[in-house]
Image 1 (cartoon, protein in one colour):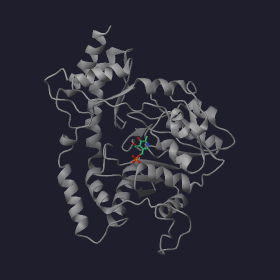
Image 2: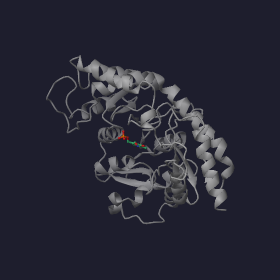
Image 3: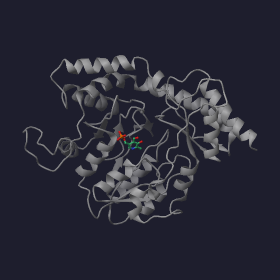
Length: 377
Ligand SMILES: Cc1ncc(COP(=O)(O)O)c(C=O)c1O
């Protein structure tokens, strides 16, 4: 390290939200002193809280965001021979959950500004085998959800919203997760509303789908009769400790998001003038959920190394687009198939962002980024 200043960690687990430890301990104690452990009253209360927050008819608590997608795709009856149009650049779950059904993820390129599924590319990828379109929210941005909802309606296919990182965002006046047949939220610890472990939630207005998903998350078991299984399901249940903890945190969602939005806005102000060396995400954070602050940077790997030398930790989300992942080699893609996704994988860099960043940290990160490009011009 070439600096005597304290490091700027990417995510400061030692200095996270106030009361975190007390809330975890309180949740454990509360459940330990009860006789409820899995899918009981606290899980039901969390489902109610998410329903109220999002306006959904149903919220179905599950074990993770990935579990949420898995359960939705199973409830939709997706399987071999079916195709799902999905972005070439996202977290693995967006496509792996499709592949695990035996269906084919059909990748489409992403929009260069949002890094999310491009509407025209999605349209071009639809075939007579397409059963669903599965876009993802990423970082601080979202796809053209209104356009994708219209595409799904026109083609008579399901829109499944991977809004794992979108809880609390509104898009065109509608809550994230509420555009299609079903949407998901993840409570992975680093998310704006993070649990103290894995957890997820599904929202839908579809009564039949909700009933099927409630069964599927619990081994396909009848909702009233124990050990009667209507279908082959999963163990994808949420536990009461997780729900008790999340019930304490959910009321603070806007507070957490606003703190993150302020940090993103400060980065934006301080970095915008570095274009085209550094491209910041699109402006306008008011309604967006800020999960990670990802810029596109020329000579990204050198910049990352330079920042590390300055004590600033950064993360690459995601270094390889989905179509080039070994896990999807069987789909036969090659470099050049989705040029925007590939370019973003080479340029994306997430700068430190968490609500309890010390005053001056954003300025310090931005100044270091500026120094890197000035020095090397
Ligand atoms: C876009 C996206 N989809 C799905 C997931 C999966 O959520 P989980 O980690 O809760 O399984 C994530 C989590 O990082 C994500 O970022």
